[in-house]
Length: 308
Image (cartoon, rainbow, N blue to C red; front, side, top):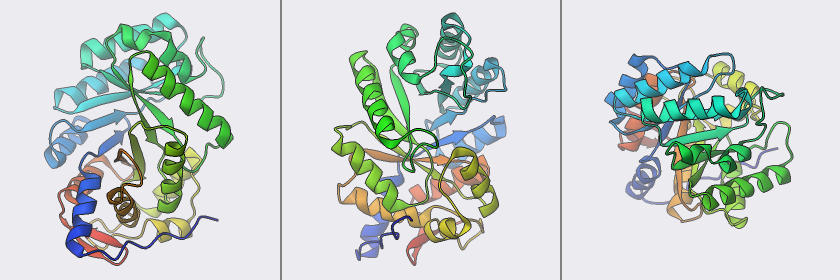
């Protein structure tokens, strides 16, 4: 059973607002098969230069990932495509895709993952192999993101995951890549805090982008949580995520953000930022994220209410 959500510290409201704004300033977004209007909505609400992570779908051709990344770049945002290594049939195929991402979309930063499939289409089975292969550096990639799992991995033991994270960070640093960690979304602020502190105790000082589900309804949250192996229940989500009392009228991560912002202000987490999953729609997520980062919210209970 998850530990109870820590109550926000009894700080002055102005300090709490500043803590939340500071924590949310450098947020990123994750999108799946975005449309041009989705990306324009991100730019219009959050501004140019926002990091946009573009999901890789095993059933879709790699050319689609390149096109979407190029579209992200074209509207003035920073594309960070997912590279699911088990999807590629050969080293040449992977090298070709990375080369096109770099030349056609100006990609310099990728998120490397093994991928959802159980078997591999080619010679690569783990993201560490790509980091060590030299392919990324060959095409001018300078930054690599690595996946983290605060709730634990659905099929891999925690100690194995910790060793793998350490190995990937070390391999990236030794090969001249700048590494950070992007986590799966989670609903327990205390659990997230413990996991981040565990990373720091292990000697991992790399920046961590903490995955949170953007505003959406409970049914959608449960569906994605089940698909992604995230611990969740209706009771757990309503307890930890809370309900936004405004125009959005859906579940949002304000209570989680408020706790994490307090931990961040206390210096407990190291270098962290927020990474939003746009399950409820890209436009709604980017608007909520931008308004929260701008301080356009009212503190309420253990969370806050974002202005329309």
